[in-house]
Image 1 (spheres, rainbow, N blue to C red):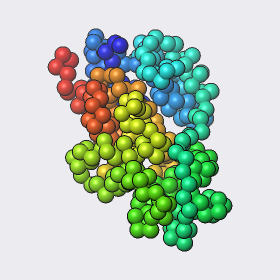
Image 2 (image 1 turned 120 degrees about the vertical axis):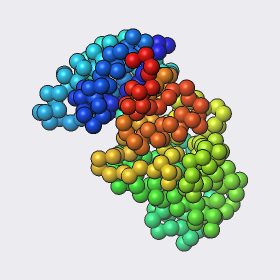
Image 3 (image 1 turned 60 degrees about the vertical axis):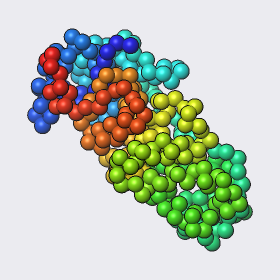
Length: 317
């Protein structure tokens, strides 16, 4: 694969508009010189960001201009996930790809669980438990059918800030009453022991400690879907890590109408696409910290930088 540097959409915009806060004009000069050795590909996520920027007259006027700039910046090199969900870099007509991306509808998230069945004492459950009503309807039995029914709400959870915040907070308090009352797992502690390491992330406030425990915690997190850490591809580990780290007090982000759960999914997709690059440049502070952590614990080769960091680190410029 050709040597390339992957730019976050915010970096592309800061550069295009020569944003003085980020020294966009100097970064544009850096890109021109760096093109002697590197390419700066456009990506699926760049086009998704552009296509979902709104339908206002002002935004629509900027679309052709942004596409032209992106085409010139990338020299029409395009990075995406191919049909085998592998990172692919090739020459594409950016305008044509934009048309395809604009038609794309994100699939409803799914969650596959092991078959299980436990009788539940609903009197011991938290009144705000996200499974309470479903368990009541299932004759006070918590089983895989309840879990599967819950997955029907995943799209709402992953797109609506209020629902996602409720889901995140409920997950954080789950272990406290599970340990105390064994509400879900009193008939089978083996399942609880398999997944409980995941909950340790809630109480770890030091990055170095989290790094030491991360493989165990991620393996536990993946156990919810009956997945084996050792059998999962790196790209899928990146995706899982972004979701997992949002339960960490170190990396948890404020979710609101501006910063929606889907933004976190975009951040994950960006790092997946950037994983084969030599550098990934972002000016999103939260994503910068999170991506650096993930690159470290998953031993990714890509180096995550901010605009001034990469610009000042190149001796040949």
